[in-house]
Structure formats: structure tokens, C-alpha cells
Amino acid sequence: MQRIFLIGFMGAGKTSIGKELSAKMNCSFVDLDLFIERRYHKSIRQIFDEKGEDAFREIEQKALREVAEFEDVVISTGGGTPCFHQNMQFMNEQGTTVYLQVSNAELIRRIKLNKSARPLLKDFADDRLSRFVEESIAKRSSFYEQARIIFPSEMQNIGKDASSLMRLLSIDLGIIPQNETYGRR
Image (tube, rainbow, N blue to C red):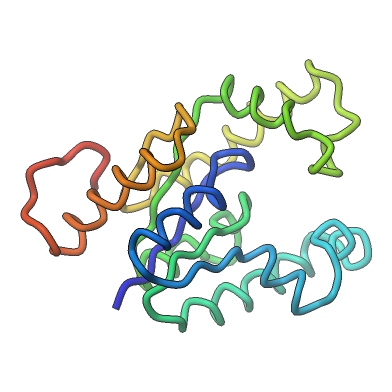
């Protein structure tokens, strides 16, 4: 049984790499935000606006515990998921956590390319976006760095990243002998 949790900031590639990784590993893929949206028939933004962040984080916690029951699955979490309700500890207990680590500069570049898809950030000027990313990463990095595997995902070559990550996970899960150690804890 494999249960892999992908964590990291928005724009880190959790969904893209997660889909590719799950295909390569022949297991299911769950995007936690999409799971919540389908369950509540509302966007994450609508839930935030209507219920507030505290209520959303409780919904997110319950959804995380539900999908953590699945077997042979790659789960892409929301960027804030590890930072609330002991979710990081829970994910570490339930499976293998992977932090897709990307520099602030690269995250900012990626978010700028797709700002329209992120309602919270679409009206941010470049300097405000930079401050937002830097401040958010500073607050979240202590949670992200608790991941079992810290995987540098700077280049955004989804196929190559998924293959490299699959190899690290195979070592971590004991499927193949260990001969690579970068990024493991």
C-alpha cells in the first residue's frame, strides 16, 4: 500500500507532478482542493468567502482524513494544508510526504504566468505578489520542511521530475536498493 502526499506552495507543481507520478506508479490521484470543491459544489474561494478561513480549514482537515483512507494514491494537498490542525504530523503518520521545493523567484514567475486562475492574487501588482509569496513561504516553510522527502522542483520538467521522484519514492518505500540519498530525511 502506498500513500503519497505532495505538499508545497501554490505553483510548486503538486497537481501536475502528482498526475504524472500517479500514472507512472499506476495508482490513483486525488487533488484535495478539487475533492473539496466537488463535495461542496463550490470553489475554494467561495467557501473561504462564505464561511471564512477557520471553517475552510476544518473542512480541509476532514477531507484530508477521508482521502488518507485511500490506498495506492498520490494526494496533492492545498498550499496551506500542512500548516493547520496538525495535518503535517497526520500526513507523516499516514504515508510518505514530499515537499516540492521551489525558490521564491520561480514561484513568483509561475504565479504571474497564471494569475488569472488564482482569484486571490489576480489583482496583485508585482511587488505585492513578491511580498505575499516571501511572507507566506517564511510562515509555512517550517511545516513544509517536516516532509520525509524534500524534492527540488525548480525546472518544472513534469515528466523528468515525476520520474526522479518515483525513483526516490521507490528507495524510500524499499522497492529498490538505496543508492541515492539527496533530499531524504
